[in-house]
Length: 510
Image 1 (tube, one colour):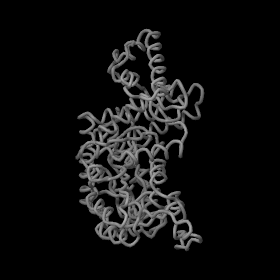
Image 2 (cartoon, helix red, strand yellow; image 1 turned 60 degrees about the vertical axis):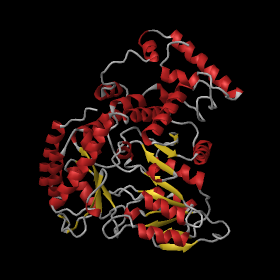
Image 3 (cartoon, helix red, strand yellow; image 1 turned 120 degrees about the vertical axis):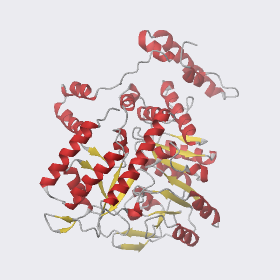
Image 4 (spheres, one colour; image 1 turned 45 degrees about the horizontal axis):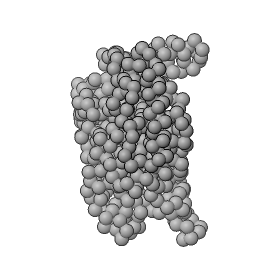
Protein backbone atom coordinates (compact mmCIF):
# COMPACT_ATOMS: atom_id res chain seq x y z
CA UNK A 1 0.00 0.00 0.00
CA UNK A 2 1.07 3.58 -0.59
CA UNK A 3 2.73 5.58 2.16
CA UNK A 4 -0.15 6.18 4.60
CA UNK A 5 0.16 6.68 8.34
CA UNK A 6 -0.01 3.33 10.16
CA UNK A 7 -2.83 4.57 12.38
CA UNK A 8 -4.99 5.07 9.28
CA UNK A 9 -3.72 2.13 7.27
CA UNK A 10 -4.93 -0.37 9.88
CA UNK A 11 -8.57 0.46 9.12
CA UNK A 12 -8.34 -0.76 5.52
CA UNK A 13 -6.23 -3.87 6.04
CA UNK A 14 -8.13 -7.19 5.62
CA UNK A 15 -9.99 -8.39 8.72
CA UNK A 16 -10.01 -12.13 9.33
CA UNK A 17 -13.50 -13.65 9.37
CA UNK A 18 -15.15 -10.46 8.11
CA UNK A 19 -18.40 -10.83 6.14
CA UNK A 20 -18.00 -10.74 2.36
CA UNK A 21 -19.92 -7.49 1.92
CA UNK A 22 -17.81 -5.70 4.53
CA UNK A 23 -14.61 -7.16 3.07
CA UNK A 24 -15.51 -5.81 -0.38
CA UNK A 25 -16.27 -2.39 1.09
CA UNK A 26 -12.96 -2.37 2.94
CA UNK A 27 -11.08 -3.39 -0.22
CA UNK A 28 -12.76 -0.59 -2.19
CA UNK A 29 -11.73 1.96 0.44
CA UNK A 30 -8.19 0.56 0.45
CA UNK A 31 -8.03 1.11 -3.31
CA UNK A 32 -9.27 4.67 -2.88
CA UNK A 33 -6.75 5.43 -0.16
CA UNK A 34 -3.86 3.94 -2.18
CA UNK A 35 -4.87 5.74 -5.36
CA UNK A 36 -5.10 9.10 -3.64
CA UNK A 37 -1.85 8.68 -1.71
CA UNK A 38 -0.04 7.72 -4.93
CA UNK A 39 -1.50 10.55 -6.97
CA UNK A 40 -1.03 13.61 -4.78
CA UNK A 41 2.29 15.43 -4.52
CA UNK A 42 4.09 17.84 -2.26
CA UNK A 43 3.00 18.75 1.27
CA UNK A 44 -0.30 16.86 1.05
CA UNK A 45 1.54 13.63 0.16
CA UNK A 46 3.81 14.05 3.19
CA UNK A 47 0.85 14.73 5.47
CA UNK A 48 -0.92 11.56 4.31
CA UNK A 49 2.25 9.68 5.23
CA UNK A 50 2.22 11.28 8.68
CA UNK A 51 5.27 13.50 8.19
CA UNK A 52 5.87 17.13 7.33
CA UNK A 53 4.17 18.69 10.34
CA UNK A 54 5.07 22.23 11.37
CA UNK A 55 4.73 23.53 14.91
CA UNK A 56 2.85 26.74 14.11
CA UNK A 57 -0.63 27.95 15.08
CA UNK A 58 -3.11 26.73 12.44
CA UNK A 59 -5.45 29.69 12.49
CA UNK A 60 -5.21 33.48 12.58
CA UNK A 61 -8.68 34.60 13.64
CA UNK A 62 -8.31 38.22 12.51
CA UNK A 63 -6.93 37.16 9.12
CA UNK A 64 -9.94 34.89 8.64
CA UNK A 65 -12.30 37.76 9.51
CA UNK A 66 -10.46 40.13 7.17
CA UNK A 67 -11.03 37.70 4.33
CA UNK A 68 -14.70 37.24 5.23
CA UNK A 69 -15.28 40.98 5.48
CA UNK A 70 -14.52 41.43 1.79
CA UNK A 71 -17.77 39.64 0.91
CA UNK A 72 -19.96 40.10 4.01
CA UNK A 73 -18.96 43.03 6.22
CA UNK A 74 -22.24 43.00 8.16
CA UNK A 75 -21.84 39.40 9.32
CA UNK A 76 -18.14 39.96 9.93
CA UNK A 77 -18.91 42.90 12.20
CA UNK A 78 -21.01 40.71 14.49
CA UNK A 79 -18.39 37.94 14.54
CA UNK A 80 -15.63 40.49 15.19
CA UNK A 81 -17.56 41.84 18.17
CA UNK A 82 -17.74 38.30 19.54
CA UNK A 83 -13.98 37.92 19.02
CA UNK A 84 -13.39 41.23 20.81
CA UNK A 85 -15.59 40.14 23.71
CA UNK A 86 -13.68 36.90 24.18
CA UNK A 87 -10.39 38.75 24.04
CA UNK A 88 -11.28 41.61 26.39
CA UNK A 89 -14.00 40.43 28.80
CA UNK A 90 -13.73 37.61 31.34
CA UNK A 91 -16.04 34.85 30.14
CA UNK A 92 -16.94 32.83 33.25
CA UNK A 93 -19.99 30.83 32.19
CA UNK A 94 -19.22 27.23 33.26
CA UNK A 95 -20.76 25.69 30.14
CA UNK A 96 -18.34 27.65 27.94
CA UNK A 97 -14.69 27.07 27.20
CA UNK A 98 -12.08 28.04 24.63
CA UNK A 99 -11.84 25.64 21.71
CA UNK A 100 -8.17 25.54 20.76
CA UNK A 101 -7.04 26.77 17.36
CA UNK A 102 -6.45 23.20 16.22
CA UNK A 103 -10.09 22.36 16.88
CA UNK A 104 -11.37 25.47 15.13
CA UNK A 105 -9.16 24.77 12.12
CA UNK A 106 -10.53 21.22 11.93
CA UNK A 107 -14.09 22.57 12.07
CA UNK A 108 -13.41 24.61 8.92
CA UNK A 109 -11.93 21.66 7.00
CA UNK A 110 -13.66 19.94 4.07
CA UNK A 111 -15.01 17.36 6.49
CA UNK A 112 -17.78 19.96 6.80
CA UNK A 113 -18.89 18.86 3.34
CA UNK A 114 -19.21 15.14 4.11
CA UNK A 115 -22.62 13.52 4.41
CA UNK A 116 -22.50 9.92 5.59
CA UNK A 117 -25.09 7.76 7.32
CA UNK A 118 -24.27 4.70 9.38
CA UNK A 119 -21.33 3.54 11.48
CA UNK A 120 -17.85 2.10 10.93
CA UNK A 121 -15.67 2.18 7.85
CA UNK A 122 -17.62 -0.60 6.08
CA UNK A 123 -21.06 0.35 7.37
CA UNK A 124 -21.85 3.56 5.49
CA UNK A 125 -24.79 4.09 3.18
CA UNK A 126 -22.69 6.38 0.94
CA UNK A 127 -19.39 5.57 -0.75
CA UNK A 128 -16.45 7.96 -0.68
CA UNK A 129 -16.62 8.28 3.10
CA UNK A 130 -13.54 6.24 4.05
CA UNK A 131 -11.43 9.12 5.43
CA UNK A 132 -14.31 10.49 7.52
CA UNK A 133 -15.03 6.99 8.83
CA UNK A 134 -11.42 6.71 10.01
CA UNK A 135 -11.87 10.03 11.81
CA UNK A 136 -14.90 8.68 13.67
CA UNK A 137 -13.18 5.43 14.56
CA UNK A 138 -10.23 7.37 15.96
CA UNK A 139 -12.60 9.46 18.08
CA UNK A 140 -14.29 6.33 19.45
CA UNK A 141 -10.99 4.58 20.21
CA UNK A 142 -9.66 7.63 22.03
CA UNK A 143 -12.89 8.08 24.01
CA UNK A 144 -12.68 4.48 25.19
CA UNK A 145 -9.03 4.91 26.13
CA UNK A 146 -9.42 8.22 27.97
CA UNK A 147 -12.51 7.19 29.96
CA UNK A 148 -11.87 3.46 30.34
CA UNK A 149 -15.01 2.42 28.45
CA UNK A 150 -15.67 -0.64 26.33
CA UNK A 151 -17.95 1.14 23.84
CA UNK A 152 -18.33 4.73 22.64
CA UNK A 153 -20.68 6.63 20.34
CA UNK A 154 -19.60 10.09 19.13
CA UNK A 155 -22.36 10.92 16.62
CA UNK A 156 -24.89 12.70 18.86
CA UNK A 157 -24.95 16.34 17.79
CA UNK A 158 -24.94 17.73 21.34
CA UNK A 159 -25.86 16.89 24.92
CA UNK A 160 -29.64 17.03 24.60
CA UNK A 161 -29.74 14.72 21.54
CA UNK A 162 -27.42 12.33 23.36
CA UNK A 163 -29.84 12.18 26.27
CA UNK A 164 -32.74 11.68 23.85
CA UNK A 165 -30.91 8.76 22.27
CA UNK A 166 -30.34 7.02 25.59
CA UNK A 167 -33.93 7.52 26.73
CA UNK A 168 -35.33 6.18 23.46
CA UNK A 169 -32.84 3.29 23.44
CA UNK A 170 -33.42 2.10 27.00
CA UNK A 171 -36.87 3.33 28.10
CA UNK A 172 -40.45 2.83 26.97
CA UNK A 173 -42.17 6.12 26.10
CA UNK A 174 -45.82 6.72 26.86
CA UNK A 175 -47.95 8.96 29.04
CA UNK A 176 -46.78 10.41 32.31
CA UNK A 177 -49.10 9.93 35.27
CA UNK A 178 -49.45 13.70 35.57
CA UNK A 179 -49.19 16.59 33.18
CA UNK A 180 -47.18 19.17 35.10
CA UNK A 181 -47.71 22.86 34.50
CA UNK A 182 -46.57 25.97 36.32
CA UNK A 183 -49.86 25.76 38.23
CA UNK A 184 -49.39 22.18 39.42
CA UNK A 185 -50.05 18.57 38.39
CA UNK A 186 -53.05 17.43 36.37
CA UNK A 187 -53.84 13.67 36.12
CA UNK A 188 -53.30 12.37 32.58
CA UNK A 189 -56.16 10.58 30.86
CA UNK A 190 -55.43 7.06 29.57
CA UNK A 191 -52.19 6.80 31.59
CA UNK A 192 -53.09 3.30 32.80
CA UNK A 193 -53.43 2.09 29.21
CA UNK A 194 -50.13 3.57 28.06
CA UNK A 195 -47.80 4.30 30.99
CA UNK A 196 -44.33 5.69 30.36
CA UNK A 197 -41.25 4.34 32.10
CA UNK A 198 -40.44 6.30 35.23
CA UNK A 199 -37.15 8.12 35.69
CA UNK A 200 -35.78 9.59 38.91
CA UNK A 201 -33.51 12.62 38.43
CA UNK A 202 -32.31 15.78 40.14
CA UNK A 203 -34.83 18.61 39.77
CA UNK A 204 -33.99 21.65 37.67
CA UNK A 205 -34.40 24.02 40.63
CA UNK A 206 -31.84 21.97 42.58
CA UNK A 207 -29.28 22.06 39.77
CA UNK A 208 -30.59 19.51 37.25
CA UNK A 209 -30.93 19.99 33.51
CA UNK A 210 -33.80 20.76 31.15
CA UNK A 211 -33.53 17.30 29.60
CA UNK A 212 -33.91 15.68 33.01
CA UNK A 213 -37.67 16.08 33.07
CA UNK A 214 -38.54 19.79 32.89
CA UNK A 215 -42.29 19.87 32.13
CA UNK A 216 -41.70 21.96 28.99
CA UNK A 217 -39.03 19.62 27.65
CA UNK A 218 -39.41 16.51 25.47
CA UNK A 219 -38.15 14.34 28.34
CA UNK A 220 -41.23 15.04 30.48
CA UNK A 221 -43.58 14.76 27.53
CA UNK A 222 -42.55 11.18 26.64
CA UNK A 223 -41.34 9.76 29.98
CA UNK A 224 -42.55 9.89 33.58
CA UNK A 225 -39.89 11.93 35.37
CA UNK A 226 -39.88 12.45 39.14
CA UNK A 227 -37.31 14.53 40.98
CA UNK A 228 -35.20 14.21 44.09
CA UNK A 229 -33.54 17.30 45.54
CA UNK A 230 -30.70 18.51 47.73
CA UNK A 231 -30.29 18.77 51.48
CA UNK A 232 -30.38 22.02 53.40
CA UNK A 233 -26.60 22.15 52.99
CA UNK A 234 -26.93 21.90 49.21
CA UNK A 235 -25.76 18.31 48.66
CA UNK A 236 -27.69 15.65 46.72
CA UNK A 237 -30.21 14.09 49.11
CA UNK A 238 -29.42 10.40 48.64
CA UNK A 239 -31.83 9.44 51.43
CA UNK A 240 -34.66 11.10 49.53
CA UNK A 241 -33.48 9.43 46.32
CA UNK A 242 -33.64 6.03 48.01
CA UNK A 243 -37.10 6.65 49.52
CA UNK A 244 -38.50 7.82 46.20
CA UNK A 245 -36.90 4.93 44.32
CA UNK A 246 -38.48 2.40 46.69
CA UNK A 247 -41.88 4.09 46.30
CA UNK A 248 -41.95 4.60 42.53
CA UNK A 249 -39.70 1.74 41.32
CA UNK A 250 -38.18 3.74 38.44
CA UNK A 251 -36.80 2.15 35.30
CA UNK A 252 -33.86 4.56 35.44
CA UNK A 253 -32.07 6.67 38.03
CA UNK A 254 -30.27 9.63 36.49
CA UNK A 255 -27.35 11.43 38.14
CA UNK A 256 -25.91 14.66 36.79
CA UNK A 257 -26.65 18.36 36.71
CA UNK A 258 -25.97 21.70 35.08
CA UNK A 259 -25.61 23.70 38.30
CA UNK A 260 -24.37 21.33 41.00
CA UNK A 261 -20.85 22.08 42.27
CA UNK A 262 -20.11 18.74 43.97
CA UNK A 263 -19.01 15.22 43.07
CA UNK A 264 -21.39 12.27 43.46
CA UNK A 265 -21.73 9.14 45.58
CA UNK A 266 -21.96 6.74 42.63
CA UNK A 267 -21.52 3.72 44.87
CA UNK A 268 -24.70 4.52 46.74
CA UNK A 269 -26.66 5.21 43.56
CA UNK A 270 -25.58 1.84 42.17
CA UNK A 271 -26.77 0.13 45.35
CA UNK A 272 -30.13 1.92 45.16
CA UNK A 273 -30.55 0.87 41.52
CA UNK A 274 -29.78 -2.76 42.37
CA UNK A 275 -32.06 -2.84 45.42
CA UNK A 276 -35.27 -2.32 43.44
CA UNK A 277 -37.71 -5.04 42.42
CA UNK A 278 -36.38 -4.72 38.87
CA UNK A 279 -32.90 -3.12 38.97
CA UNK A 280 -32.97 0.39 37.54
CA UNK A 281 -30.69 1.56 34.75
CA UNK A 282 -27.98 3.81 36.21
CA UNK A 283 -27.37 6.76 33.88
CA UNK A 284 -24.90 9.61 34.45
CA UNK A 285 -24.96 12.91 32.57
CA UNK A 286 -21.51 14.37 33.26
CA UNK A 287 -21.70 17.06 30.58
CA UNK A 288 -20.09 19.72 32.75
CA UNK A 289 -17.23 17.91 34.41
CA UNK A 290 -16.10 15.35 31.81
CA UNK A 291 -12.71 17.05 31.43
CA UNK A 292 -12.07 16.72 35.16
CA UNK A 293 -13.00 13.02 34.98
CA UNK A 294 -10.69 12.53 32.00
CA UNK A 295 -7.84 14.03 34.03
CA UNK A 296 -8.58 11.82 37.05
CA UNK A 297 -9.64 14.76 39.22
CA UNK A 298 -13.23 13.62 39.74
CA UNK A 299 -14.66 10.12 40.05
CA UNK A 300 -15.28 8.18 36.85
CA UNK A 301 -18.86 6.85 37.07
CA UNK A 302 -18.03 3.87 34.84
CA UNK A 303 -15.72 2.63 37.58
CA UNK A 304 -18.67 2.66 40.01
CA UNK A 305 -21.09 0.67 37.90
CA UNK A 306 -22.87 3.30 35.79
CA UNK A 307 -24.66 1.59 32.91
CA UNK A 308 -24.42 4.49 30.50
CA UNK A 309 -22.58 7.83 30.67
CA UNK A 310 -23.28 10.89 28.49
CA UNK A 311 -21.37 14.14 28.20
CA UNK A 312 -20.84 17.12 25.95
CA UNK A 313 -17.40 17.81 24.53
CA UNK A 314 -17.22 21.61 24.73
CA UNK A 315 -17.35 22.41 28.45
CA UNK A 316 -14.43 21.38 30.70
CA UNK A 317 -13.20 19.03 27.97
CA UNK A 318 -12.61 22.06 25.73
CA UNK A 319 -13.48 20.55 22.36
CA UNK A 320 -16.09 21.43 19.72
CA UNK A 321 -19.84 21.21 20.20
CA UNK A 322 -20.80 17.54 20.32
CA UNK A 323 -21.46 14.66 22.69
CA UNK A 324 -20.21 11.20 23.60
CA UNK A 325 -22.17 8.23 24.94
CA UNK A 326 -20.15 5.59 26.81
CA UNK A 327 -21.04 2.17 28.19
CA UNK A 328 -19.43 -1.13 29.14
CA UNK A 329 -22.52 -3.07 28.06
CA UNK A 330 -22.56 -4.23 24.43
CA UNK A 331 -26.37 -4.58 24.36
CA UNK A 332 -26.79 -0.99 25.56
CA UNK A 333 -24.24 0.16 22.99
CA UNK A 334 -26.10 -1.50 20.13
CA UNK A 335 -29.44 -0.05 21.26
CA UNK A 336 -27.91 3.42 21.53
CA UNK A 337 -26.40 3.16 18.04
CA UNK A 338 -29.80 2.34 16.60
CA UNK A 339 -31.42 5.19 18.55
CA UNK A 340 -28.86 7.68 17.23
CA UNK A 341 -29.05 6.39 13.65
CA UNK A 342 -31.54 5.85 12.15
CA UNK A 343 -33.65 6.66 15.21
CA UNK A 344 -32.88 10.36 15.56
CA UNK A 345 -30.29 11.54 13.08
CA UNK A 346 -29.23 11.15 9.50
CA UNK A 347 -25.68 12.05 8.60
CA UNK A 348 -23.17 12.78 11.33
CA UNK A 349 -21.21 16.06 11.56
CA UNK A 350 -17.73 14.79 10.74
CA UNK A 351 -15.92 18.08 11.19
CA UNK A 352 -17.16 18.15 14.78
CA UNK A 353 -16.27 14.49 15.25
CA UNK A 354 -12.74 15.21 13.99
CA UNK A 355 -12.49 18.05 16.52
CA UNK A 356 -13.62 15.61 19.22
CA UNK A 357 -10.92 13.16 18.11
CA UNK A 358 -8.30 15.91 18.43
CA UNK A 359 -9.34 17.01 21.91
CA UNK A 360 -9.41 13.39 23.08
CA UNK A 361 -5.88 12.99 21.73
CA UNK A 362 -4.89 16.09 23.68
CA UNK A 363 -6.62 14.65 26.77
CA UNK A 364 -3.94 11.94 26.87
CA UNK A 365 -1.22 14.54 27.50
CA UNK A 366 0.17 16.01 30.70
CA UNK A 367 -0.60 19.50 29.39
CA UNK A 368 -4.31 18.64 29.39
CA UNK A 369 -4.14 17.22 32.92
CA UNK A 370 -2.33 20.32 34.14
CA UNK A 371 -4.99 22.54 32.56
CA UNK A 372 -7.82 20.58 34.20
CA UNK A 373 -6.05 20.80 37.55
CA UNK A 374 -5.80 24.57 37.12
CA UNK A 375 -9.53 24.76 36.31
CA UNK A 376 -10.38 22.87 39.50
CA UNK A 377 -7.85 24.70 41.70
CA UNK A 378 -9.02 28.08 40.42
CA UNK A 379 -12.64 27.20 41.20
CA UNK A 380 -11.65 26.24 44.73
CA UNK A 381 -9.70 29.46 45.30
CA UNK A 382 -12.42 31.61 43.72
CA UNK A 383 -15.11 30.01 45.88
CA UNK A 384 -13.09 30.57 49.04
CA UNK A 385 -12.31 34.17 48.07
CA UNK A 386 -15.97 34.91 47.32
CA UNK A 387 -16.93 33.59 50.75
CA UNK A 388 -14.19 35.63 52.39
CA UNK A 389 -15.84 38.64 50.77
CA UNK A 390 -19.09 37.64 52.47
CA UNK A 391 -20.83 36.07 49.46
CA UNK A 392 -22.95 32.96 50.19
CA UNK A 393 -22.42 29.92 47.95
CA UNK A 394 -24.73 26.96 47.51
CA UNK A 395 -23.23 23.91 49.27
CA UNK A 396 -20.51 26.15 50.69
CA UNK A 397 -17.98 25.55 47.92
CA UNK A 398 -17.18 23.39 44.91
CA UNK A 399 -15.55 20.11 43.89
CA UNK A 400 -15.51 20.88 40.18
CA UNK A 401 -15.29 23.94 37.92
CA UNK A 402 -18.51 25.76 38.77
CA UNK A 403 -19.76 27.99 41.56
CA UNK A 404 -23.39 28.75 42.38
CA UNK A 405 -24.17 31.94 44.30
CA UNK A 406 -27.43 32.36 46.21
CA UNK A 407 -28.24 36.09 46.24
CA UNK A 408 -31.07 35.80 48.77
CA UNK A 409 -30.57 37.18 52.26
CA UNK A 410 -27.27 38.86 51.45
CA UNK A 411 -28.47 42.48 51.50
CA UNK A 412 -27.62 42.98 47.82
CA UNK A 413 -29.79 45.79 46.49
CA UNK A 414 -30.41 46.82 42.92
CA UNK A 415 -29.81 50.55 43.29
CA UNK A 416 -32.15 51.84 40.53
CA UNK A 417 -35.16 50.23 42.28
CA UNK A 418 -33.99 49.85 45.88
CA UNK A 419 -35.26 46.25 45.88
CA UNK A 420 -33.42 42.97 46.51
CA UNK A 421 -31.06 42.05 43.70
CA UNK A 422 -32.19 39.12 41.56
CA UNK A 423 -30.18 36.86 39.28
CA UNK A 424 -31.10 38.57 36.03
CA UNK A 425 -30.14 42.00 37.35
CA UNK A 426 -26.89 40.67 38.83
CA UNK A 427 -25.86 39.00 35.57
CA UNK A 428 -26.54 42.17 33.59
CA UNK A 429 -24.62 44.34 36.08
CA UNK A 430 -21.67 41.97 35.86
CA UNK A 431 -21.77 41.93 32.05
CA UNK A 432 -21.65 45.70 31.94
CA UNK A 433 -18.60 45.35 34.20
CA UNK A 434 -16.83 42.98 31.80
CA UNK A 435 -17.64 39.78 33.74
CA UNK A 436 -19.73 37.29 31.75
CA UNK A 437 -21.63 34.91 34.05
CA UNK A 438 -25.22 33.64 33.90
CA UNK A 439 -28.29 33.89 36.08
CA UNK A 440 -29.38 30.56 37.56
CA UNK A 441 -31.99 29.11 39.82
CA UNK A 442 -30.97 27.99 43.30
CA UNK A 443 -32.52 25.37 45.61
CA UNK A 444 -35.91 26.53 46.85
CA UNK A 445 -36.00 29.38 44.36
CA UNK A 446 -39.39 31.10 44.17
CA UNK A 447 -38.50 33.44 41.33
CA UNK A 448 -39.28 32.51 37.75
CA UNK A 449 -36.50 30.81 35.71
CA UNK A 450 -36.24 33.91 33.54
CA UNK A 451 -35.34 35.94 36.65
CA UNK A 452 -33.89 33.55 39.32
CA UNK A 453 -32.37 34.21 42.72
CA UNK A 454 -28.86 33.07 41.86
CA UNK A 455 -25.93 33.36 39.50
CA UNK A 456 -23.51 30.72 38.22
CA UNK A 457 -19.86 31.06 37.23
CA UNK A 458 -16.97 28.82 36.25
CA UNK A 459 -13.22 28.84 35.68
CA UNK A 460 -12.70 27.05 32.36
CA UNK A 461 -11.72 30.13 30.36
CA UNK A 462 -9.82 31.72 33.25
CA UNK A 463 -7.55 28.66 33.32
CA UNK A 464 -7.18 28.72 29.54
CA UNK A 465 -5.82 32.26 29.93
CA UNK A 466 -3.23 30.98 32.42
CA UNK A 467 -4.69 32.78 35.43
CA UNK A 468 -4.07 31.38 38.90
CA UNK A 469 -4.85 31.96 42.56
CA UNK A 470 -3.95 35.70 42.75
CA UNK A 471 -6.24 36.48 39.84
CA UNK A 472 -9.07 34.43 41.38
CA UNK A 473 -8.80 36.51 44.54
CA UNK A 474 -8.86 39.72 42.49
CA UNK A 475 -11.87 38.56 40.46
CA UNK A 476 -13.73 37.66 43.66
CA UNK A 477 -13.19 41.21 44.84
CA UNK A 478 -14.48 42.58 41.54
CA UNK A 479 -17.61 40.43 41.70
CA UNK A 480 -18.23 41.57 45.28
CA UNK A 481 -17.78 45.22 44.33
CA UNK A 482 -20.34 44.94 41.53
CA UNK A 483 -22.90 43.04 43.63
CA UNK A 484 -22.65 45.46 46.55
CA UNK A 485 -23.06 48.42 44.18
CA UNK A 486 -25.45 46.81 41.72
CA UNK A 487 -26.61 49.19 39.04
CA UNK A 488 -24.02 51.90 39.74
CA UNK A 489 -22.58 52.95 36.32
CA UNK A 490 -19.43 54.41 37.88
CA UNK A 491 -18.59 51.17 39.66
CA UNK A 492 -19.29 49.18 36.50
CA UNK A 493 -16.93 51.39 34.51
CA UNK A 494 -14.26 51.13 37.21
CA UNK A 495 -14.47 47.32 37.33
CA UNK A 496 -14.55 47.09 33.54
CA UNK A 497 -11.20 48.88 33.33
CA UNK A 498 -9.72 46.41 35.79
CA UNK A 499 -11.06 43.54 33.71
CA UNK A 500 -9.44 45.05 30.62
CA UNK A 501 -6.13 45.15 32.50
CA UNK A 502 -6.47 41.47 33.49
CA UNK A 503 -7.33 40.28 30.00
CA UNK A 504 -4.45 42.29 28.53
CA UNK A 505 -2.07 40.65 31.00
CA UNK A 506 -3.50 37.16 30.32
CA UNK A 507 -4.48 37.09 26.64
CA UNK A 508 -6.13 34.14 24.94
CA UNK A 509 -3.41 32.40 22.98
CA UNK A 510 -4.84 28.92 22.37
